Amino acid sequence: MEIHERKESGVVVLACRGRLDGYGAGILEKAAKEALHDDDRSLVLDMQEVPYLSSAGIRVMLVLQKRLRERGGKVALAGAGEFIKKVLEMAGFLSIFPHYATVGEAVRVLGRAEERAQLLTDLRSPSIERDGVRLSIEPGLHKPAALRVWGDLPAVLYSRIDARHIAVIPFSGTEYALGLGALGRTAEEVLPFLGEMVVLHGSLVWLPTDGNDTPDFFTPVKDTGELKIFAGYAVSLEGPYREYVILESLSRDGMTIGEIYDILNAWAKEHYRDYKGILAVAWWAVMEGLRSQGVKHSPVKEHAPPGAVSIMDPSVFDSWFEHDSVPRYRGDTMLGFGIAIDRTLSGGSFDKESLESLIAPHPGEDSSGGGITSHTHGVVFRNVSYDPGAAFEAQVRKILGEADFVDMRHLMSDTKIRKAKIGIAPVSSLLHT
Image (cartoon, rainbow, N blue to C red; front, side, top):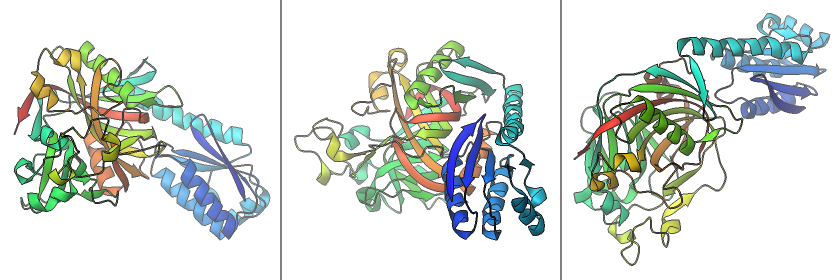
């Protein structure tokens, strides 16, 4: 069995050649898994060169049909011969799969469904095209939002964290946050494992610095107050998102998070009269390629770099941080939280010390262009449909509860995004704990 993949009019086409028996079914299952991304809803199986079909092949096809119907899409067959149709009829599944004489006909029909879905989205939130993206806006809540800073960023940067510097953050009331932390019973217990962390709708995801490079995940169903988030440094959002931006790259290569932050900053300056140059941003996105950096050591005194330099100093940076050499997770879903600062604009509204407590720019990515400094942590999920018409917070809860958890990382500004629904909150004040 040979399978070749292509995409036409938003529809994935898998051209199959050979017997779809037990062996071929395994190949089809693997090919479909690689070809269908979280924003795909329609699949055409080109069966012109498939002379044989067994129950094993039908089973894989049924799994794919169920998966795509849950997304509001479908699997269609094209060019199936008489033997294939008779097998499906005898198995009782011929009516389950729409079948067309040619791939072109199948793509036209399924492509129209994709166009209707886009039209419905546009009717709910009319879109505009600018700066290489298609944008539409949904209203949130027009109420003040603040960022609260926890812990001691300088102590983290100079690797002198001890129990006195650890902030204890309650789960209750902490909807979105990022920083360096861990889950545990006491500050002393978590000190050796402090790593990149993010809170999404009350769920904590973190990457312990235990040498295993494996993230951990905790979602409290009931907050008893006995478990808390321990952080050497963290920034949490207090307040709602003012708007939700639905964004789709007009380039097949996607666009970087840095470029998107520039667009969001420009939008805020244009539309928010009270904008002071800091945005809190919640991400629900389909990725085109994730690039990351992650701290390798807990910033305790025994790990302090020689010469009393910051862990961000170029002389020691590579020994402190892991780096992605190749983009990963193309087509997978990302939930994240980030902060973007327009250094020129924010300097007139916030004091220098407060701004420096928010972000420590990483060498090589201290600006995403246009003077924007950003800090973003993201969690990767798989096998969840992307539907920009869904309510943002409801979809975040659904993904956290149902999707396949894959990874968590500090995202570099050259991480590429294909599509996203993004909550944005202009920050009116900075609070310190």
